[in-house]
Length: 194
Image (tube, rainbow, N blue to C red; front, side, top):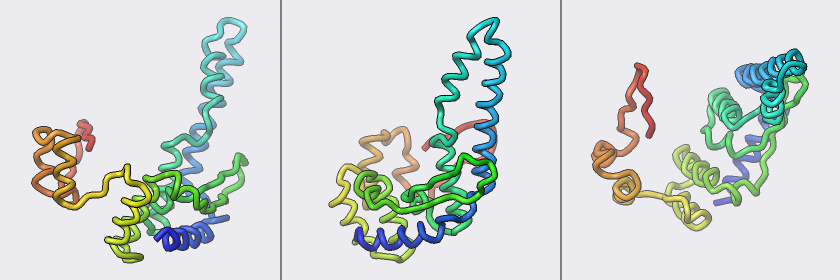
């Protein structure tokens, strides 16, 4: 199973390597970089009076230009562009240039990610099975063998897990239908977390 997953991810990495970084990601990087520069200017302009901005600058400057959310923006944009599952994009390694004029990115597949990051392994295994790249039962078995700490469900197991971990009384709709038929609330100012 791992060999099949590796082959798919290696091929995807080759096709993404030296491709253009999505504009939305470059925009996100510009926004973060711009805010770092703005805080630096505030620190420089006020350092003779107080250290408030200087302290903030040291904190902001220590942040990577790409934070965790930025990486997910990259995965989502590439997933949409390449019409591949988000999990496949998350299982690859990317290198983005600090040069504002460089639009291309590097991409490679590191096989260790399937061993070290169980969430990547499990999500790629199931998404690949849904795409018909391998059998669902093969994916289940591989996940349970390689990453037994990540729950793998059948319908009965899912309902038991919800009861134990989320509270049956708190989420009765999850026990009536599986997540595929669950309607996600839309609109308004309310925030819904599942």
